[in-house]
Amino acid sequence: MKTGQWRWWTALAALTLALAALTAAGCGDDDDGGDGGGDESAALQKLGKGEGEVNLIAWAGYVEDGSTDPNVDWVSDFEKETGCKVNTKIGNTSDEMVTLMRTGSYDGVSASGDATRRLIAGGDVDPVNVDLVPNYKDIFPALKNQPWNTVDDVNYGIPHGRGANLLMYNKDVVKPAPDSWGAVLDPAEAAKYKGKVTAYDNPIYIADAALYLKATQPDLGIDNVYELDDKQFNAAVDLLKEQRDNIGEYWSDYTKEQAAFTGGDSVIGTTWQVIANLVQADKKSPPVEAILPKEGATGWSDTWMISSEAEHPNCMYEWMNHIVSPKANAAVAEWFGEAPANEKSCALTANKDHCDIFHADDEQFFDQVAYWQTPTSDCGDDRGSTCKDYSEWVKAWTEIKG
Image 1 (spheres, rainbow, N blue to C red):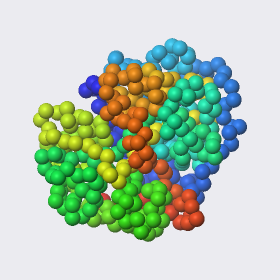
Image 2: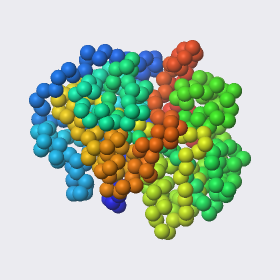
Image 3: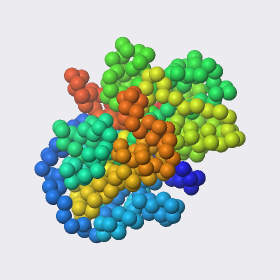
Image 4: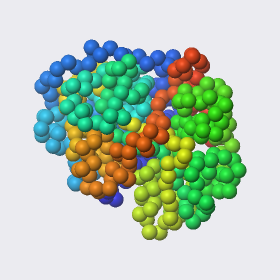
């Protein structure tokens, strides 16, 4: 990948999920835990003539027209082929995306799993008729019909790409090589690197602690790390409060984590594969390794969704089909730094090792990934509505950081 592409990660890595006004606007209607929707008849039944434009909300780097780098452009051809001019609003957080979609001013959004369920429950997005998206047939099967894009067997979006949150460590300092999140979450283990442990700065990070407790304290009965009752939630929060004493810095800007590992200020902590690649490529950096710990990991799977108030639904369907076409999906996955959703994209990446690096077709790898989801009060089982919703996660995260 070209050096210029990493500028986009600054905006992406700002996924800190606003802790005040945006939280209220983005989450306030979803505490009942309802899934909403489920009416397949609301989906477009026949593709018509394009309306001339499409208004998108997207993560930075998902909609490139050559203005950032003339060699990076999967928008211009789309506009020429369809006559749909693409207008893009960058969403810097999932909460911001939810808020913007609720204005009714946009046709679609590239939503992560911690936003999709809010949009579905709020009636902000319509079901998607996948028969009108020919390239859907080539999407990796494991990305289809998942809780963050499907309700009651009704599809609410087109999968875009995915990735995992990994454990990165300085091989010169962290010995023996870790194989568990215990290296940063077990108080005794993490204390060995006090002040040089780093963690993702986001309320959703509570799920990482729950994932570790699921494996190490089975008596808590944790199943889904986003469906935590009072006892489970408090255990995860308490663990992260203990971890706080060993944290040198929480990161949300990928460049800061990269610099911290390169300079030796951080020696172990949560990362993305793309950050590990950058550190490893820097000859001035100490040697690092990024692993999927034995407990598994959290991660993300992004979905293109159409607004229930879309003014340009035909162009939106054209866009969804285009962005998951083999060529476009390969380009965006490589530029952005993730695994593509389209199986055929792996043959088209400039770096022929891209799909191996990002485990694109490695379902054994992704079977160990708990994709981000919006926490709601509905536990999804006989516990009823006793789980902690997202607002509680935000409040707890503020307490964790102190």
